[in-house]
Image (tube, rainbow over all chains, first blue to last red; front, top):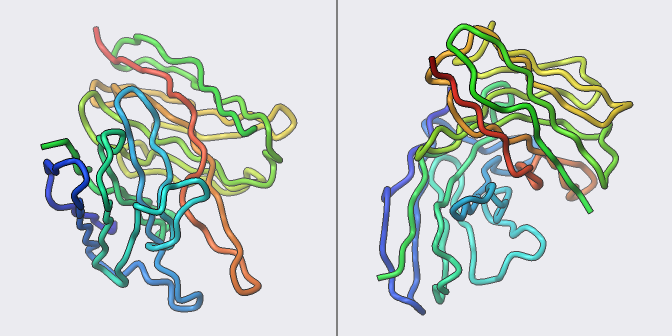
Length: 114
Length: 126
């Protein structure tokens, strides 16, 4: 199985500042024939199901504010939230679907307001 | 709009069975791969099982292989999770999710899960 490791486990950021979350995969999730990274980011607020934010490592899902951005390729990825808003308090997960028979999520990163 | 509604959760004793259902509406259900994902209390997300759009291929996490069975009925727009020999570590909220593919440059590629239900809780306890 591809192991997804996020860092940090939690972080506190001031309103209006930038939050950065890392995700590392134990092997590449870059699909060579499509040149796309099969990695997504999700946001989960308390009592709610996850919400897809970013797919292919850097493409924002429709309706997601542009303060959310994703970057990285291969095994190292970053989710950046610029100009943090109060409503961004949530747990964030990365997910790989490079290996469709064994899909895995990172352990999650809890984002709070400082 | 796209809607997924899970049902069938509850409290069950270890070793017993339970069947979860997920009713879909608002989209062409038979065109999509569907998944079950679970979340133990206070823990992260764990993919459980997936099923191809036509039901011909199913795949499972190692933690449930041999005990859980995913199936679907495209005529009823529903996906199911039959859970047997339940254990305490199966206690979780179970979500069904739609697997989406987006097209770019003339071909289509998987892009994660764009729609989720609200989940149904399963508690395995004596």
